[in-house]
View 1 (cartoon, rainbow, N blue to C red):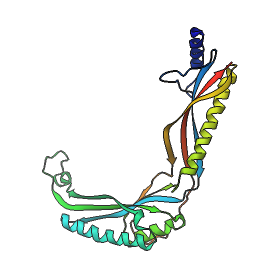
View 2 (view 1 turned 90 degrees about the horizontal axis):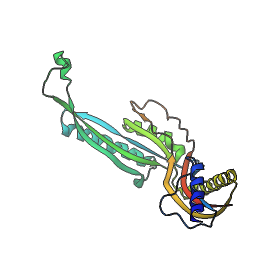
View 3 (view 1 turned 120 degrees about the vertical axis):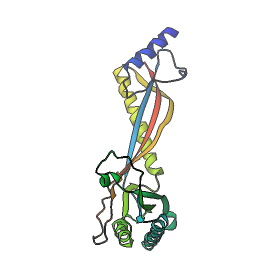
View 4 (view 1 turned 45 degrees about the vertical axis):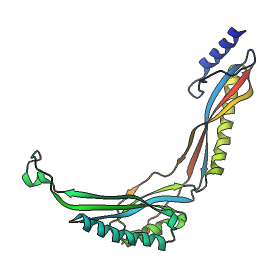
Length: 249
């Protein structure tokens, strides 16, 4: 009897392609002549986004580090003030990058020899300050960007569209994933002349993923343009499950 069970398990494993995963660890007890099938499946739920995340900030230069940082601080204060005037709450504005770096001269152009070995010469400094912003009123996104540029922002990246609350969409994705797993189990059972019996185990594997609109970067050179058009599209959230079924004769 033990040999018959092992042969049944081996036969099912040989018939399962990449869509179904081999079970690792101890094999649960099953009825004689039955076998185990482990299936991996995902489910997707799509929603219209209700939040956009983007970064905005200022790059400033100066002959000294102090001059660059001072100019940057003054310009960045204007940008943050513009964000708040646009209705962005304090909790939705967070500093995400602050840096100060030297700017070096290109000595190869001065000597005419790109291989010439000379000590690097600092000719100035460059300061960067960026904030990450959550825009909750998507209809005003383009207007906010235009306001930022007018206030002196010269670096803008984004947006990444997301959902503020994901529980409902993820639950929908979970249900879809389990349904897909059962449908796939029925397919394997039919192909092998068996029936889907009890559900032995279920594992929420691989976590969840959101597929937002890819980030894009633009340099805000001036404030003469109008508010940029923004297409929200949709976001997709994915749940992954691994389900083990008992197949019976």
